[in-house]
Structures are given as C-alpha cells and as structure tokens.
Length: 188
Image 1 (cartoon, rainbow, N blue to C red):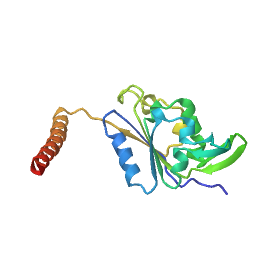
Image 2 (image 1 turned 120 degrees about the horizontal axis):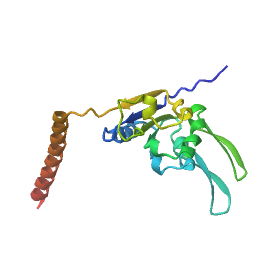
Image 3 (image 1 turned 135 degrees about the vertical axis):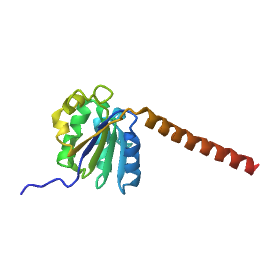
Image 4 (image 1 turned 60 degrees about the vertical axis):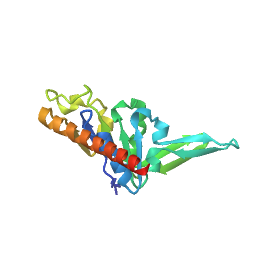
C-alpha cells in the first residue's frame, strides 16, 4: 500500500518583527534533534547533501540540514529569501523524506525523516489584508503543497499595546544592566 509521511511540515508566514525567528530558534533548542538554518544563506547542497573530495582524493557524502535533522525537526528561517532552485531541491525531502544522490560515482538514498518548520515574510513586506493569502505568498504551489499547515502571523497595529511592549522590553534590559552594574561593584 501507500506509505504516508508521519511528520508535519509547517510554514509561518507573517509580518516582520513578530518573533518568527525567535520561535524557530526556541523549537530547535528544545527539540531532541533540531537543526536551525537560514534559507538566505543555505544552498541546495547545504540543505540536502553534497559530495566532497577528501584529503586522500576520495569522495564522501556530507549531509546537509535535512539529513542532520533526521528523526527531528529542521527549522528554516527566511524561507522566502531562498533561491527558487534551492527550494526545489528540498521537494523530495519534504514529501518522500529521502534525498537521492547521484554524484561523483556515488549513488545512494539518504533518510530525511524530519518535520520542517519554516518562517517567511509576505511578498509585499507586510501582510496586505486587501489581498488574498495566495497573493501575499510568493512561492510556487509545488512547495506550498508540501506544507501541511500554513499559519499567518500578523502584527496588529495598536499604539497602546506597542508602547506597553516597548516599556517591558526596555525595563528588562535596564534591570539586567543594573544587576550587572551591582554585581560588578560588589565584586570590587
């Protein structure tokens, strides 16, 4: 019969400064097997696998983020900033949970049984309520269809709430600085 993928792939699409990156980093830290990478700086080989020539001129495989996250979760930040060719490279990994390699005389299949948690910004920088979700997402349907859940993360403009958050963040940093000054003066 048909084999069903047991891992869920999730895309967080939302406004900048809504803590998507912090959420991905937190998930990577608390997961038993977690890998965090930025889509902006990752190539297809860095996400899947590459063949590398060793010191003795022999070729060997080097697993990318999706292979290293086998049995866990792969968090990909700035998914919208990835080159389209690099996104296409993870199609097989997200759907079949394998990565096929045929390079430098090495033909093999690597496991990538991982969930993908990706974060992206809308095509216009901020989510536009006057446009549909499809118009706000600048990705091919082939990659979007591999995500089981797509969550829209919005920054609702509310001046009073923004001021309260800013005061809280500043207070935390000022207390930390004061505690550091106190500890430094007490140590002398």
